[in-house]
Length: 477
Image (cartoon, rainbow, N blue to C red):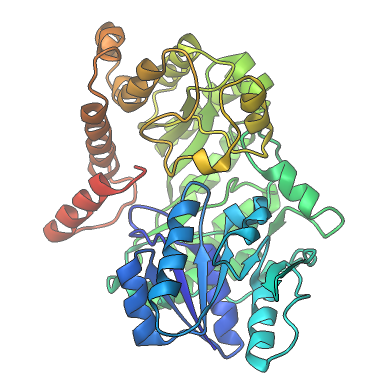
């Protein structure tokens, strides 16, 4: 069988690799099927259909892009000369499975889908019954079949490595910067995340948080290194620390077997001097931690972060003292907060002195605790179709001082880096210059990341120009 994946394929140097799709592709290829990927644009999808002649269109999407993908699917089906089966997957479908009722969608894949998708494609190829495959909702003869999820994959080492050839063949330019993941699942309960919903879906279906073995992770990196000139490794785990024994083994073996600069995400309360020193010695040159809010009530009562101010400031200090690039993630425009609490977040970042202060406009998803809080408080109508593709331009919420908050978002990182701008900030945020400030934000972020060489990748002059234009044009930033 031939499966054509359709996604918003972004340049890996500017964003994360689509690891979910890449895992699905490697499992399908192992089962004898063929795969290809294309960007979510009608003309490109149609050209790929005539060139590749797929049996299945497999869409992968996140919330905010659903209408674009539904319209695209219907347009392709209407224009393509052959009847073709379409299945939708990705985070949006897992948490909004009612999407199966949308016109043109034949099936959806929810949850951890590798084993189920292979089973589904095998059955589809053989003409067997496809109405009772775990993790799959499907329409057939006017009826919708909704199936439970299969148990979570206990041994992550049993999965084949993500299919990077899928991306390399599409982009034609293998990047020297590659993303990896060492774990699945999260044990925390932040109000803006779907973790609580995910646990309900997988109740009694296995352990939520799982970790790959160190040797398995390093083997994947070494295999990628044989194919391309790999200069930076980015670990995309929500929380890179697990047990001290795993970290100690990883740092020792990584230094001896790989020895390439890497970056990772850490939770502030888990940042300890010994752990960070081990990471530094192993080659870690960039760390992201999340403050989210500088206001104790907003951070711990509304967002459920369960972090003290002391833990966050201490984490930032330890990372900086070990000469590691520090990226702090924040959120402003939070329901239940105010412009004043957003300024508290700004001031906390100024105190912590990160190399870059990343900030988003709060966009609570329906079916999360924060989404329910926003809906009950009248901040948001709770309709997922009104959710925006990006949280970097405008807020979807009904909040006080909305224009000021949106302008603060654009100027946040610049003011953290140059605190003297505080004297002018309250005037700057009332000016109708949001689009101009947005351009400034992107340029400044690119300047900090590349000037300070966060990703330690050597670029030619032509590559620098190409990435600069893509960076400015991309939706998020």
